[in-house]
Image (cartoon, rainbow, N blue to C red; front, side):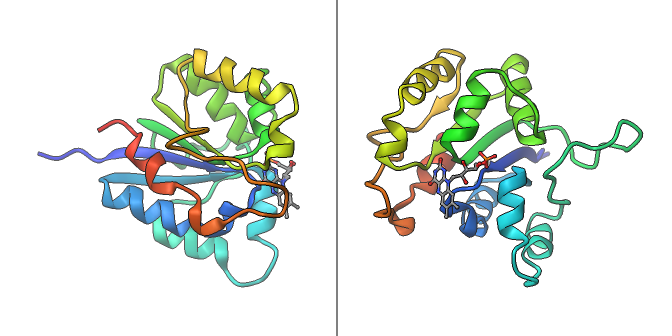
Length: 181
Ligand SMILES: Cc1cc2nc3c(=O)[nH]c(=O)nc-3n(C[C@H](O)[C@H](O)[C@H](O)COP(=O)(O)O)c2cc1C
């Protein structure tokens, strides 16, 4: 008997969020049932044109795309996660996450996910000027100490100079490979 494990893919508002079918298909190929959660900013990006991007992502995952907290009276619409992948992780969400802030659904899931002991992999995307803010290295260390597999540096995401990003080089597969077998 095979049991399908559920992966929550949590995407923040950085350019790789424009290519979410890539990690969704890669995770599905690795055997995961993928549920997509966007930050409110990432949802705004995906909703900019009336191209049906959200509907296409719902069709690809087979689940509603979530981006805000449900009301207390509403039912849960997603299965519980067995693991979480935060990609792309912005500097904004990194800093709020490390501080324990949970004012978006995405942050609520990843702050609570640490306490639940869920396997969490995070693949950042920011430029080296953003990365030099003193909060960033401090908060990367805080989250690593809390058990998050944060793929920054060799083997993961290496920050680029401002306006020099290469979306084709974003290492989605390294993040999929870092998920529990
Ligand atoms: C075109 C554009 C590109 C951006 N790229 C990045 C990025 O690569 N990394 C990052 O940390 N923030 C980036 N930002 C800033 C974030 O979108 C912004 O901090 C936002 O509040 C993040 O919200 P979230 O963390 O809730 O998704 C970018 C903003 C814009 C408009």
